[in-house]
Length: 345
Image (cartoon, rainbow, N blue to C red; front, side):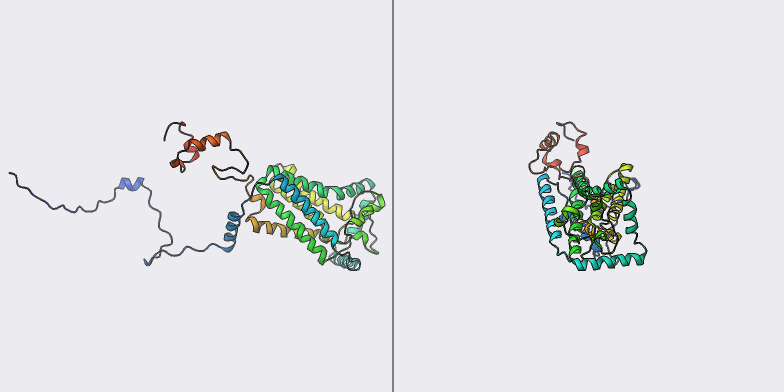
């Protein structure tokens, strides 16, 4: 019989790395946050406070698809509350006239007190001042509503953030009416300004003529004609691509500024107050959504495989979801489409 031999297994030396493998195999990325003394990984650096707040805002308050009926009720109720509160501000006539005299003296000191000259010059051209009276009375509301409707249909992902900026601008203006009652130039005693609505008998202002008892006469600071028109102009300028439309977006607040001065409804500094209110509204919108409205996605992104409440999924999406196997969740959509429906990759 043959002799059974048991040989001990020799330990082979560790194979040297192949130069071919080294050339084709990507090198492992270096370990990050590793301490050189071998005491373990170092803690990752903390992000800045602003970046953390921005990520938190985007994660907790993503834009949602606006709903038509809710937005109509919200805008109507908000404007009703705004008008109610604005008109409920006590008409402190004596204080408002003193503040108007102070504003006028400040503008004279700064060398910008040209409202009276502009008012008299434009009033000499009847067709021009009458057009400005109607501009002041109507476009303030019409253009703002049109921009809101345009945002709702064409930029639903940015609508909520832009609307919040507009609402915050209007809300902080109410505080200005309480804190700083101000008479418009046309009501100043001895200011020699012309109330163009009364002179030309046009329906041009809720604070003149037959409508003066329906609106607070001494709520000129800040000017929401400037706050709203600047919101409209900047929104259009940031979101449209046609050059002519962008130019119109910038011309609208500039023309509104000329109108409020020519009709003697506001001082230059009232316009500055409206700009500051808009700046506050934009900052609040940025803090809430983590981004300015024009930097948010244009459309509201719905997670894959889910639909909005009450909406029917598209046929192509439903078929793709139905035939997808449980283990194919990680396959990219482009890779799925490269195979026939009944063939497995």
